[in-house]
Length: 366
Ligand code: GUN
Ligand code: ZN
Image (cartoon, rainbow, N blue to C red; front, side, top):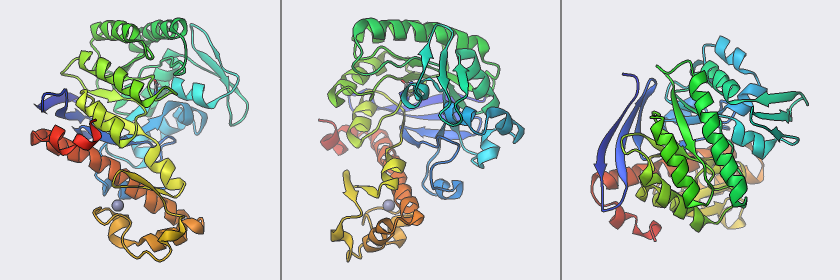
């Protein structure tokens, strides 16, 4: 069997769980943070460097890879894993969400989404079938259903119609999926901030007996406290014996709270985006390494961290690199930030196995 999800432990009167998710390209010990490699590259980081951070699974994006270089080239290269030289698990997002956030002139209809390529002005249409075709050609271990994610402030009618359409599109995705053996297709729960719609979406998704489920439509402009409410309500309703993935989240607190609600997988661009802006995640805080207070600070970036950056470089050196806009500065900061968030989820995993999660992480859980 190429995929399995083995629950190891639940803990502390919460929904928190530790599990092992096995994929064709290796295991993911959950809960675990997944860094984003949108264009088949985790920005500024080599796969070798990534391996040393204990990252297990990474993301890539259908939308970006379809525009450039195109899935046929990646298929000819032997698939995404070979093309980018990453032999661990990969998940691809389906593209719909990125069309909405990144392209102008989009038009949505029952058949799919039409938009103008920001690269060369071509008119492109993504449909559920097309998204799955592309994802089948890319060959990631986990692929995502093509969904419609309305903005966080959308009213009930709009969210309801997007949620219903997402369900109809999901059934088309299932029909189109040609690599059931070695690619797990996850369904995405939409429903915005409306519990009734979330419940309805989850009930209909569960009947389709998919190999995994994601909660989408969060962190799209709504308040952070609403994110927690949605996740707390939705995650426990999903099947216990399948992986649960919270899309596009996020911060230490959101991750800790979501794990307490029963989420297993996370992704977010924060570590790499912050890294490129000279910001480091240290001890739950955000540090701007440009700050002149670091000019003569010869301590490691994070004295408790054992990543390559923190073992070998000082705050003063990173301050110098960032001020000089040297690429290496961004690489070293991204490397630390990724290590930091992966470690955060690894530490939570250990505390779940040790039955001490709510005690060890109480500062994040209130
Ligand atoms: N990434 C973050 N949120 C979402 C979502 O709702 N749908 C998809 N496809 N990707 C996402
Ligand atoms: Zn570090």
